[in-house]
Amino acid sequence: MERFNALVIYEKDDGTFERKIEERQISDLPDNDVLIRVYYSSLNYKDALSATGNKGVTRNYPHTPGIDAAGVVVKSKTNDFKEGDEVIVIGYDLGMNTPGGFGEYISVPANWVVKKPESLTLKQAMIYGTAGFTAAMSVDKLQKFGLKDGGKVLVTGATGGVGSIAIAILAKEGYQVIAATGKIDQTEFLKSLGASEIVNRNDIIDEKKALLRETWDGVVDTVGGSILASAIKALKYGCSATTCGLAQSPKLDITVFPFILRGVNLLGIDSVECDIEFKKYIWNKIANDWNIDFHDDFYEEVSLEQLNEKIDLILQGKIKGRVVLKHSAP
Image 1 (cartoon, rainbow, N blue to C red):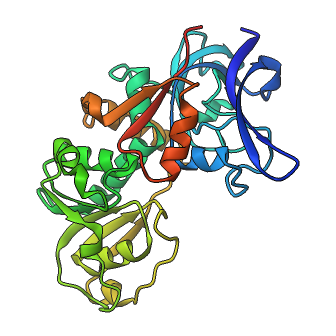
Image 2 (image 1 turned 90 degrees about the horizontal axis):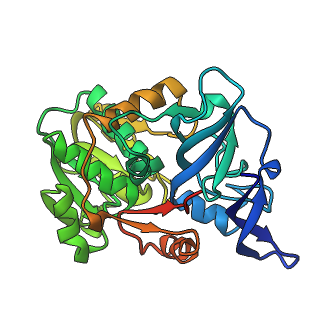
Image 3 (image 1 turned 135 degrees about the vertical axis):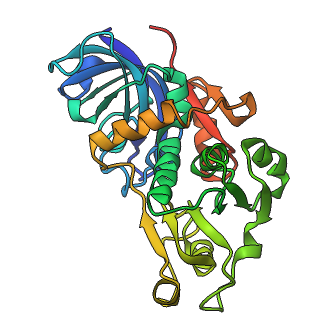
């Protein structure tokens, strides 16, 4: 147990970055409350940013990314967890400046850790990961803000991790899901998740008008920019849009008219720093009400050696669904 494998990102003297799989020691990890043997992790866009040297995500290198981890407690300094407990860790500083799930072990504070619900496997937890957790948060918040039964909900960035899982959850809840994407060739994939209609993302963008025809009972937006602005302008009276991403742009060029003339709501979604009790609540929703049997085409399971290629592909927008990292057996 003293040594383990991890993907480590190094900053070179010329300012470029390189990735290496190398052997690390438990003593290299921070001295935190809970030591966890990681069995599964998953690849998120933020991990790819960390793996390519984005200082807005990770300040200091060498570093091991991986904002998601699911595994088994090996050592615990707290009575809240004991050896053998199956647990999930997402968010907080994991994989950003604290060594993350792309290593076979992590050491984290106890208040970052959630006991895995019994009806969820470690692998299933990482098929969801931060992306699925964010999707579940988005649906939960729309419902709390009055999303009507059977309503028409727009999901942007539909083939990505958050978008695709949001589609599946919304469809399971009985909503009419319209998937907006630039990858129209993925129509069958999106319909298999439960989307009732697929639209080209460019067809819903209107940057000129202050208001658009009332169309959506709710919106789950994952990309920001003009797509989000146009979606807000097309919300029905009193309805809401959630926002959790900025793949298109962090800017929102919009007037106040949708808010003061239609009383719509823009709801921010943050899965990183939300309260641990709320994380337990969402994980239990995922494990029970929103536990979806995803088909094999939805995710790809990879080894640590195969992860490098996937990091490049997610940055190029060429990943659909989820990439799940399976660490080798101990």
